[in-house]
Length: 82
Image 1 (cartoon, rainbow, N blue to C red):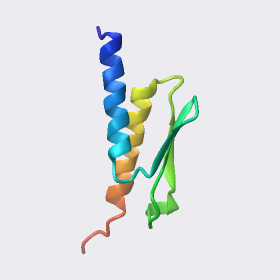
Image 2: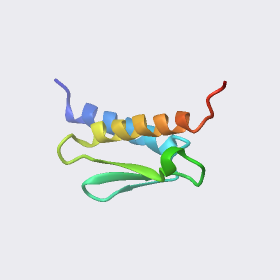
Image 3: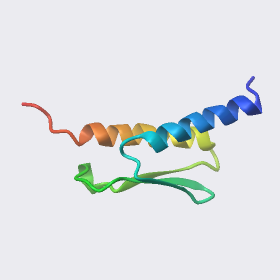
Image 4: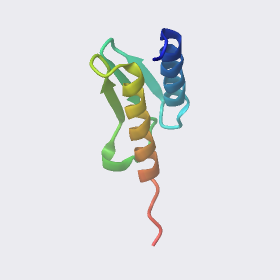
């Protein structure tokens, strides 16, 4: 069983990882969603950012989903060597 402090530390760790990622130009919490705006660039599928809701799943899980997507978009921005 986890304590409130452990949950808060996990959420803060996930938030810091998202905020420090090179794909995060800006992060916003609108009360139901985290929204991350990507920096200017040529990203796959013209993606300008990512968002995830946390009212059902919780903030830590939403931030982890955002981090996973940011990493996928970052790696997808590199050309495939032939």
